[in-house]
Image 1 (cartoon, rainbow, N blue to C red):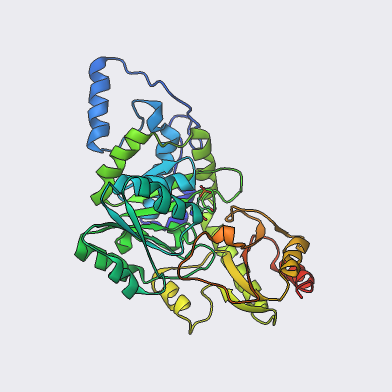
Image 2: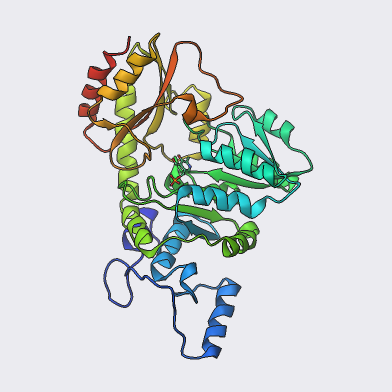
Length: 392
Ligand SMILES: Cc1ncc(COP(=O)(O)O)c(C=O)c1O
């Protein structure tokens, strides 16, 4: 019967052998075959890309990781989904599968800092050039593309600064030019945005965040189009990325409630933004909520919802007082890895941002990244209200 993704997330991944509602955690290195002929036949089946229930060696995964891949394939509407041990592993897998010496990668100037380092520092050692474009200008992106461009890499919205781009325009342009496209979709997840359907070849999600949802596991997913599947498969084979069965199980458990959690993160965030918007000390909120803004329009064009991560720009002559604001929050932890059930806040010192060519805070402006969790939003507002008093 036809079913929505909400229902699918509840019923997928049942264990056929134990008849239990969740898959077994199968830890395996050796996988036995009755005969050599059977082993070879299964290896041919794996190589042909046909649907399988088990692998021929534990480095590929086990029944547990296959269950997770099948769930994500449906959620992402992708040709295939690779699993990695961290979200950043999925970033590296995507880029290293595609780029080769002599190539250029045109990359948004708003990506996660380790992605900046990988592309500007490591790739340079292999004679692969990273060229940065302004995420607020499609014209700039077009101007940066040359005959050597192999990959356009987007993070949407931008890390810490939350720029939204016209994703469909980018993929159509790239297709015309025969350039591969990748996106880091961790903020929206495939629940709110389906990048492969928009035309991206590679879609990265740090499953550590909303897919897990419980701040107790690290994992990454890389959904791919048919066009790049073989390239990524090959690179994955020679580089040894994998996710453990235990971690895959925890991600499956998190995915059961992905829809409910994301909708609640969104609801709480809207309530809190309504309050934040009235605070004089906060001069800008980096989130798609003002219907007249470009940020909102570009979000609305592609996303079916918004998550709980945003930036607030505070005006103050005293950085110490903004630190005090963050330090005084009782229900917002100071820490990384948003996407769990709890609220977090981090002052964005330049180290968080990495090197940016197209973004600069003005004098006396301070950026604080906030994750709105699943707590009672009234408690969060009281906490913010009490702590904002410290901003001088
Ligand atoms: C946008 C984005 N992509 C990728 C990652 C990397 O994920 P992980 O921490 O699971 O390696 C992060 C982590 O914060 C992130 O914010």
